Amino acid sequence: MHLKKGCPILPKFKLGILGGTFDHFHLGQKFFLKKSFQFCEKIIIGLTSDEFTKSKFLATAVLPFKKRRQELEEFLKEKEFSRRTRIIKINNPFPLAIFNPQIECLFITKKTEENAQILNLKRIKKNLPPLKIIKVPIVTNSQGECLSSEKIRSGDMDRKGEIYIEDKFFEKTFFLPQKLRSILKNPLGRLLLGSEKKFQTAALKVKEKLKLFPPVFLVTVGDIVTLSLVKERVIPDLSIVDFKVGRKQIYQNISQLGFSSKIRVKEAINEPGTLNPELFQAIKSFSGKSSLVIRVLGEEDLAVLPAVLLLPLNSFVCYGQPGKGIVVIKITERIKQKFKKVVHQFQEKDRE
Image (tube, rainbow, N blue to C red; front, side):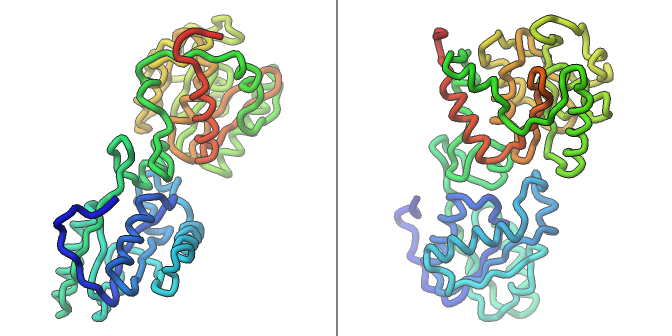
């Protein structure tokens, strides 16, 4: 990406400043830094503290300060910017460093333009000259969407801006190919043991894991898994059920799964051995503001795949492993890439 032709050539500054969370360090942030260093000899980088990030969108999915600083320093070293940089920890949008009289410019994006104006007003009140504001363009992906840490945390795209789920999965039905059947029978995450007759044993283990590692959202796929956790007073944020056990209908309504009649329920068609667009749409509609039960008309066996691809990072997806226990999948960037490869092997037309 380049600045538009006709933009005036900016002067070379000696000292500038910029700030950010630099979470899940991505292509857009790299561009922002490289462009900033073109105009400035030295830059002070304000990196938000863990306390500051608590107000961020999906704050529990933000990487810790130590990890964010490490990724930032590795990039600066790679591009030979380290000697031209000083990183400071900031706890608010207007750290004391902004009152340094030697600072000449401030690098921003469109999203931080308002704070830049406020910052300059604060400098003027202290009899300091306003900073030259340099707005760096935001990088977009092939779909025209802006790259952002928020969209990475929400599970929409990776650090290069590539989306995990293409639009075609919301429009057409895809069939499970024969070559994937044996692969998907194996646990896709960590298996917590507990036979079908002693499923509560596994449910208790899940409950303990949730206490140690609270997820962004808890998702259950399958009636027995859902019921077992609800019995332990663990109410999933999103439950995907089909009222069946072993492909035989056992339940008639959500109250038999331990839910209140007031819980929100959405129906979605998903035939056996398929990924139907209605299933993707239903999962995508989950906002996280209140618990949702998706009642699948057909089978929910494959719902784990779109759930992992559509839910935010640091969410947990739990499903049953027949005769063995409960599988817990922590959604990470690596897991999303793995599931993306699996889903893209599904066939758009006929079964094999």
